[in-house]
Image (cartoon, rainbow, N blue to C red; front, side, top):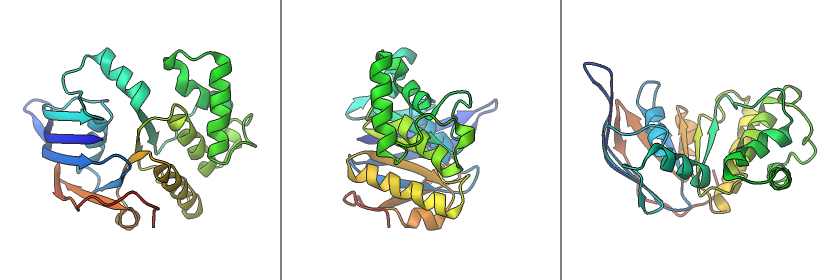
Length: 229
């Protein structure tokens, strides 16, 4: 599903190399944690995986297609149809209901308003928020807001879900609930790559890799997708 080959990423003048020859392979249906300290390059890696950033050199293959040389418009189409994003900060619009926040995830697919609302309702029911459709983010708990964000990321049924510290702003119970939900999505077939600095959390995933100073130091063999421990 994902294949990174000899990826480097540099910033500034003189260039500072943030990623240094990264190779990473993620099979369809895997749940992979990318763990590392702040400044290790893991968020830059996630941005390249999500086509939000381009590598300085190297090859990025998603679902069998080399996206390294695609135009910006073509990359936008890849993100729209193949990738969902979940962030630590939720990034929800305060003035809009949970239903509208999730429906907005389909805007760039050209869906009608009726279709967006129908699909958004189904997505919110899938994450256990069918009773919160009309609530605004300010009326929801942190865990509920992250569930809305996950519903928005998955409303279009993307093959790949990228999560950047999705439990970072949550208490322990809410974080555990979100991880359980991600595990359910994975068991349904979604390929998930999750960034975290929490080694204990990463150790509970079916597979994890460690990034330090822009290099992947260990990459365990693929495991069959399964429940989050």
